[in-house]
Image 1 (cartoon, helix red, strand yellow):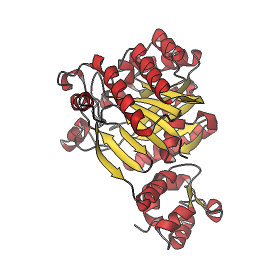
Image 2 (cartoon, one colour):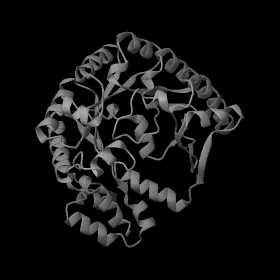
Image 3 (cartoon, one colour):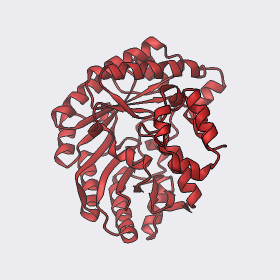
Length: 380
């Protein structure tokens, strides 16, 4: 029986960062939708979802965005309370919110902690003002360390998110950001290579020659240096872009995604996956609200996954994990996988000892070429 999880998408941001293609809206993009109505609409969606799946105990809850902490702390706590009252909560459940460092203070964090939240993920991205400016992040770099300290004092588990490979970012700037993050002593660090998404402001700037393309070779060098540096500090990688000091520091919510568990995504544009069925909500808050007012679940693109699709997802997601991918899954998708697996071992892209034990586990080099490894072992 799959475990059950909830994701709440809060689609509001003060400004739109140039690199971001998430489903987020600034005040001028809401077409009159009031942020104050969000909690009421969320209540309605939760009630409709309960009719669909019944009472299933929540193992994790994650508030993402957008910027969840643009909402008053009382509204996040109330949203969590509605979820818990509706579905129940497993003992020791992980309750996370993302936070922009400039949207919280000690009082805000205290209210979240008293309301049941126990983990907070800060969007740090960089410690270098010039890099933050390139990414159009508006927070004060010093606010990250201050709020990580306050959160730890309140008893939160803490995570910081970094981005490497911004146009013009040097290796020394990247190293500085990592050192600043480590000095905060978080429980968890995420680090993502910047991807230039089509349609974003950054993509247009690069196309116009205003900013350079990220250097892929330099991005790889930054990843390898990061792995070495974090390893010396006692962090272990457990997913391609995520590190923690102990297994209990892993993001339980994201592990549920990567292991193919069940989750319901609430809010505009949120994605869901329950019992082999996948769908997403309509994106704009006004359309989302109207469907709920009409008594409908605000979902689109509903898809019942075939057995092959489910296996492909297990392969794609499982390969990202330190624990690796069960070779039996690969064999079901590609009965002729023995040769490419042997080739990947010879090329030091997957671990030979793990392969003999029936698992496909990426080496450091393999992590840099994970998409290539997946295509080859599946014969694509």
